[in-house]
Length: 307
Ligand SMILES: Nc1ncnc2c1ncn2[C@@H]1O[C@H](COP(=O)(O)OP(=O)(O)OP(=O)(O)O)[C@@H](O)[C@H]1O
Image (cartoon, rainbow, N blue to C red; front, top):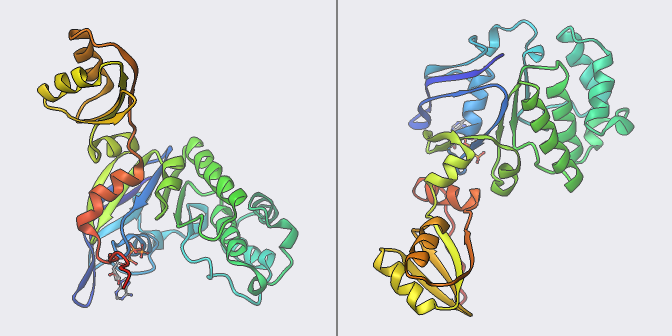
C-alpha cells in the first residue's frame, strides 16, 4: 500500500507563493478529489509530487520517497498531467512502447491499455492527428501502463465524450476498490461528486479542507428541510418559536432553514399538526464547495450588465 505525503510544502515563483505550507496525506483504497479555484496551487502540487519542479521548502513523497528516486517510476506512479505530452510524430502504440521499454514493462501491457482506454482501433495513427479526447485517453493509457499503486490525474474528463466520462469514473472507482491510491483534480463538482470518497481542497495555495465527501458537504452547507402540512400557519408559528426560518411556498408547502426533518416531525407531533410530506434537502457538493471557496477565489467574474 502506498500513500502520497505532502509535508509543509511551499513553492514560490518570485514573489508569488503558489503553494503555502501545505500538509496532507492521500491514502489508498479511495478516490481523493483535489479541488480549488483557478490558481489555487493544484497543478503546482502535482508537479512537485512528480519531481517536475523543486519545492522552495517542505516535501511531497510518494510511497515514502521522492518520485525522482524511482528507477522505473511508471511501475509505481501513473500520472496524467498534460495530454499534449506525447510526441505528435509518433503513433500512440509507439509512444506507449517507448514508455514501456524505459520502465521494463512487458510489451503486452501496451495493447492491454490501448484496449482499456478505447483507442486500440486508432493506435497506429500519429498522435498529432488525435482530438483532445483521444489524447486524453492516450494520457490515461500511459498512466495505467505500469499497473501502478498510485495514480494522479489532472482534469481527466477534459475533452472526453459522455461515454468517456462514464468510463473514467468507473475506472477511478475500480482502481480505488483494488486498493490503489487515486488523486484526481477537477473543476467539475457534479462530476467529482460521482467518484470521490474524500476531498482535499486548496485556496490560494493553502489547505482549506481534508475530509470525507459527506462531512465536507455537511460542514459547508446549511441544514434545510421541506414539509407539507394542512396547517401551514400553525406549523410556521411552532417552527419560528423554535428559532427556525420558514418560507411558506403555497399549497401547504414550507421550506425550513436550520432544521432537520427529525426536528420538524417532533415539533409538529408535539402540537398535533398533521404532516403530509417531510424530507431533508441534500446540499450538493457544488453548493458546499462554492460556500467554502467564495472568499478564496483569486479570479472572479462580475455579472453581465445590459446597457
Ligand atoms: N512556472 C510558474 N511561474 C510563475 N508562476 C506560476 C508558475 N506556475 C504556476 N504559477 C502560479 O502559481 C499559482 C498556482 O498555479 P497552479 O497552476 O498550481 O494552480 P491550479 O490550482 O492548478 O489552477 P487551475 O485550476 O487554473 O489549473 C498561480 O497563481 C500561477 O499563476
